[in-house]
Length: 128
Image (tube, rainbow, N blue to C red):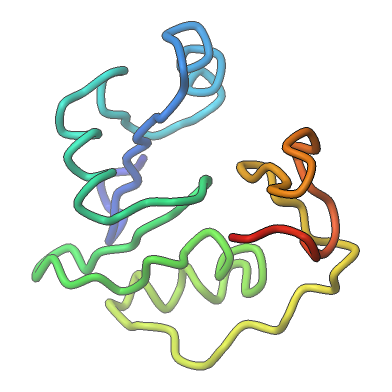
């Protein structure tokens, strides 16, 4: 990232192995915590991360959390999200609901049959 940017992106991997981390990270222009980092584990537990991908945005001077929902906000608001964060602003309001047939639950398995993963669409029989 350019040093004149008002923020910095740091990739934190939760890949199962080093090769998966390397494949993913080689496509990224930003910094990363080393694979298997203790700090990555501490952050994962501290932020109670359940689903991936996740993007947590912090205000650089104060450390204030601007959002824990950055991935969804960027998908919806595109550059408007980044512009607001670069000014240290939180984004208020709610995101529009995703149509059920566009939902992809990549990290969930159906509790009913314990076979379907990822689940696409509504999770009618799932207990979570």
